[in-house]
Image (tube, rainbow over all chains, first blue to last red; front, side, top):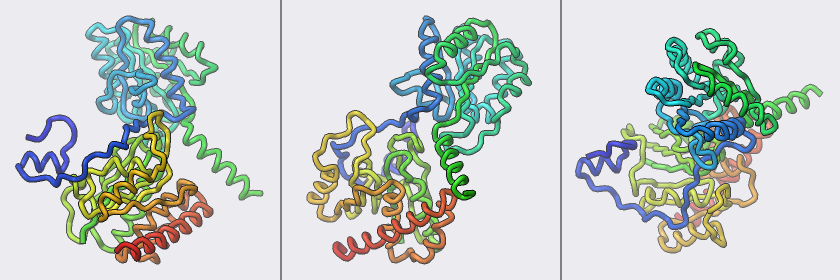
Length: 224
Length: 197
């Protein structure tokens, strides 16, 4: 039998078909795990710092997340999120949990994933006035795949208002350590608000920022 | 002709760029290729690998079985060893010797190339090739790719023509640096092949 979890590989398919696998070399004793990590200076870090401070004040909370760099918030040191299923599932799972009585139910989704498949879930949450807090961590790019443009750049607030989120509960913050008090206060306020609220921590991806600075320097050199 | 390659390294070092260089070179030679998606996180410092299969015949699986890789081409010594169970009995490891230490428990080895050298000594059929230790990442990456370009099936002229568009966006100096590294890599590979094959 092929194992139910994980991917099909030539080795587990061979085993399922009763074919012999080459033994290969034994694993080396010199290898240790090397998990990926959020970049130093990344805005998601400050967002998770703030979110962890606030949600841990509550007894029963869940943070549903999505697919992007910010999924790395599942790993130490943050351990900030409880789920990652498919693109857009952060908002719909938070809604489902809230419908079942969970509070606080928080969704964390990136700007690019939000425009890919988060908007429909948000509309659904608004229509049924679900008691959820949605964090759209906006780094102005599709960072995980190399910094391509993000379809919702400069449109996120308008999209949220367009699907019907109360304008008083669409809040934009700048995720930097110096703003920690402000961000945590806003997160607390919006978790306490009974309804759909959206918080948008917005700061450019540190990788695209470096690239843009380099391009600006090159353009300056070319002109001079 | 069939060649199964595992490209390995740390996210951000350029594994997929290498896969693209070799893959395009193979396509120009009218060969079949399959390249499996990276299993890791691009640019985030995690372990990253790519399965690259090249053949004169159609390829079915895009993954390499245990004991099936002809070559582990690595930008980092510990990452080369991570895929050891996939190396065939007659396979080669070609790795950069400079460790990329971004984890607190990186193995304490006096000589970072030591484990691959030990392996080479234990199994004379394969020999670790220590790369230049002081090279910048982009040059290391192309140096490694250049070693593959030295395969008689891949003509340098074609790769030179192919090469600039890949890094063109990053500026002429980066293209020139990569072409230079590609040539150095090719020379290093020819030296190794003359010595060992």
